[in-house]
Length: 217
Ligand code: GAR
Image: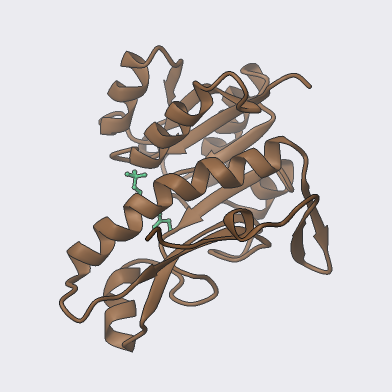
């Protein structure tokens, strides 16, 4: 099966993007990173992608005078011209319209730093600490028009320690995100996901490793 062509959309640091680029280096990985696109010209991740030999593009949302549709048409054009099969949102901090989401329905993933449907939106680590949960984590899901919703492909659980601050928890979750996203993209690129009644089933052996990543040790 030919490797799926993936676009990674970022707005900043791009550490999840870096994890996807690293995973896609393996000869048996079913996807290649065809392009990294940022909506911010100063996103640190762009430099890293460039030095890893990956094509990059910027579609600067501020150049579209708040015309969200024009911005998204430009983004869509960039994706089409690179013959992209799958879009991975990785810290891409723009809300997408139903039109754009529809263009990529079933072919666009997002990573969110919480165990959805808990803690949607921003500041998830603060919210988890406030709520006093003992288990936190991250989720990769298919994108639907509603924010931080959509069929869940895979999740990773991270313990919350009494001593955690939002920063310590965030960095532990981020390490886990870097294991989760490559695994979830693999499942989608291998065409092993099926949406059944709004849930994402995994074809083949759905081991714990594939359905819910658990902390090592
Ligand atoms: C990640 O923690 C990702 O889960 C989060 O932004 C961070 C981006 O970091 N995404 C969201 O909050 C989306 N709602 P990165 O640029 O280093 O990958």
